[in-house]
Length: 506
Image (tube, rainbow, N blue to C red; front, side, top):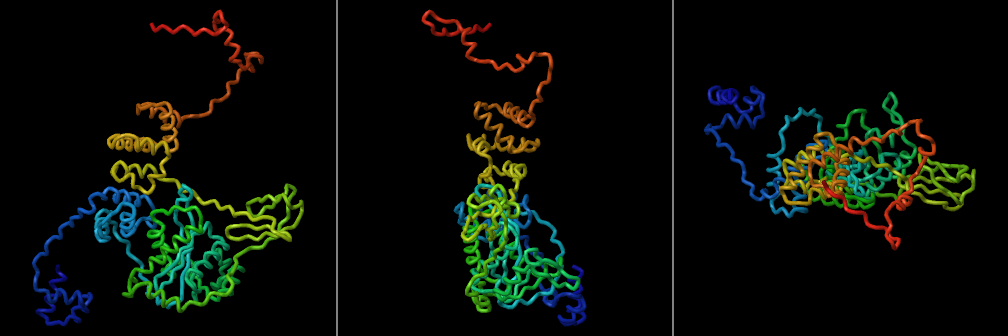
C-alpha cells in the first residue's frame, strides 16, 4: 500500500508522467498507470468458491489419482488435462476441462515455487531439432516395467515424437532416430544432443568430441549436422527437456499396456499427431500449421534407410554354442571351432556362415519397479469409493483382490483398513497374499487367525537338522510303511476291515 500511495502522490501532486513514475519506482509502466489513474479504491469482494456439482460423483476418484501422484516423482504426475481425458474416456464424465482444472488446482497442495534461473530466449528456426532419452513406466505383460524413450522435439512448431526402446545403446539410439525421421517425413538440418555415450566417445580439453564410428556414418547418410551441449548445461536444449516431461505426463500416464515395442510405438505416434492439433503456446496459431511449415524445411529422406547393425566374427565353442556379449546362443548345425559372422541389430542377432544359421531375439532385462502398497493403501483407506479406480488397483495379488471384493461396502472398508494396518506393521504384500490364500483354503474368517497366519509366514525359517548319536543306524534310517499298520485293524469274519468304534467325549 505505501508504494501505491507514492505512485498516486507522484501523479497527482508532483505532476509526473507515467513513464517517469515507472522509472522512479522501478515498475512496469502498466502497473504505474493502473495505480496512478485508479479512482475506485473500494475493497473488492472476496471471490466465492465455485460450485461444481458435476464433479461430485468423481471427487474421490480424482482425489485418489492426485494423492497417488504425490507418491511418484514429479515428472510422472498427471496433468489436469490428462485427468480430464481419463475421466471422459473411462468414467463417462460430462463436465468441461476447465471444471476439472479448477478442482485439481484446489485439491493440490501448494508449494512455494523455486526461483527459476533466467536464460536468454533462443531463436529456433524451422527444420532444427533437439533429442534426448527419457525414462518412463509401462505395464508390460502384466508387470510394472521401466523403459527408455527417445524424444525428439522441434522447437519451432513445438511438435515432437516419442520412440519407446529397451535400452540406450548405440543400436537402439540410431534405430530410434531413423524411425523419428520417417515419422517426420524428412531429416532435421541440425540436431542438438546431450553428450550421449551412444554418440560421443570422448570430449577433448578444447571441447572437441570424438564420435562413435557408426554415428558418424549415420550423420553422413542422413546429411544432418550434430551439435552437443556443454557438460551440465541441460538448458541448452530446453525444448527437448520440456518435451520429455510433457510426453511422459500426457502420453505415458496413465501407464499404457504394452506387449511389443512396435505396438507401443504406433500408439505414441498417434498421440503425437493428435497433439499437433492444439494451439502453440506463444505464436497464436495451431501447431499443425507450424508443423506443415517446418516439414518444408526438412532435408529429404535418402533412397535407402540406414541399417544400424554391428558385425562381429565369433567361433563356435566345444559345446556347439556362440557367446555374444553376455548371451549364449545354441548352434547345433555348426561344428566346433567354426568361424561365423554375427549381425547384431537393436532387437535381434543373426548368425551366418554361407547361409543363415539362425536368428535370435536380443534379450533385454527391463527393470521391474516395486509398488509402494503402504502409500497406496493409506490413500484407499481415506478414499474407499475411489480406490477401485486407482491406476494400480488391478495389480493387487489375486488373493488380496478377491478378499477385498467379497462382501458388502462396510466389509470392503474394514478389509482395506486391515490390509493397511498389516502394511503399517511392516508386513510385505507377498506375505499378506499368501496368508489370505491359506485362510481362504482353510475357510478361516476370524481376523485374529489371519494375523496369526501372517506372523507365522513372516517368521518361517527352515528347521536345522537334529544331530544326535544315540539312536542306532537301523532306527535313524527307518522309513515306516503305512500298509503294515493295516494288519493291526480288527478284521470281520468275511475278512473286511471293521469300522473303528466312535470315540466317546468325556
